[in-house]
Figure 1 (cartoon, rainbow, N blue to C red):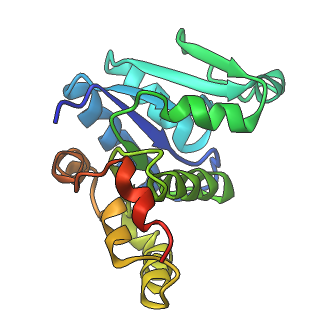
Figure 2: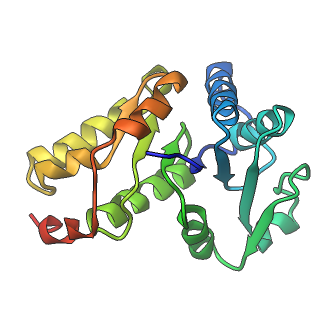
Length: 194
């Protein structure tokens, strides 16, 4: 598949361990090297800020999407010249995945988890059909992986739903995982209910 644009969900916290920043830098460099446009939440701090800083420094394309109220408190990255402002968080999430070729989720907190779980739900309903890649840096997402597998084991979800996402352990595995992701289509709604 041809990858032109990806959505990246990630943390705004600047208090996290260096390993998460290093993985984000490596991913940004790989995306720029492949001429892939990055769409993200528009933040200036944490992994969002590092993603933008490295993408811009490497000459890549990056677009921020943020509700106006967040920008008013100076959360927006000032180095971006491609920015969309929305009224609500819901609109932001819609814009983040519009026309994307894949979603990549880096470590993050409640906002990142909420974005990820919403896009998984949309995929389950056949409303989103692109690859969802979860970068499991240093095992950060192991508890989530176990929870999603338990959802299937306990029959809250269908075994087919395990094909909706791919966990990878290193930034270098992200693009191959997108290219090799299981095909998905709107017919997924037919087995959305277990």
